[in-house]
Length: 160
Image (tube, rainbow, N blue to C red):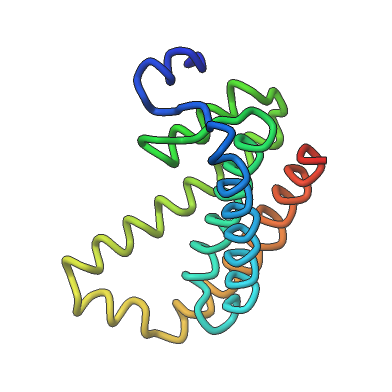
């Protein structure tokens, strides 16, 4: 496991100074809630984006926790570093499993989007079918209800 000191030395994380702390906390409090609302609103109409914004709600509340409880700011390799720091600071395996599943889902969608950028016609066919829309709609609802909401509840508990 990577140590916090190592991540500091590698400049992947830093300490949040006193002047920046309130602004940083306020940003992530609002950001995770915006992403959560966006995810819920788009479960049926735009399910792929609902998954992405659900993951970002998880990611942002994690950075809120790191800022509020540990005064840690993620600087580099944001997603992977956030998980590394969480893994080091919190020994709750269920919580870690949820954020890692969310991150893997996000990476899968990011890869889909990257491939779509390179293969526009294929992407239009893939995302435009009723079958694929239904598939992602079910996946988005399951992800939102079983991963996102569960994770947020656990992190909110740690924030108290």
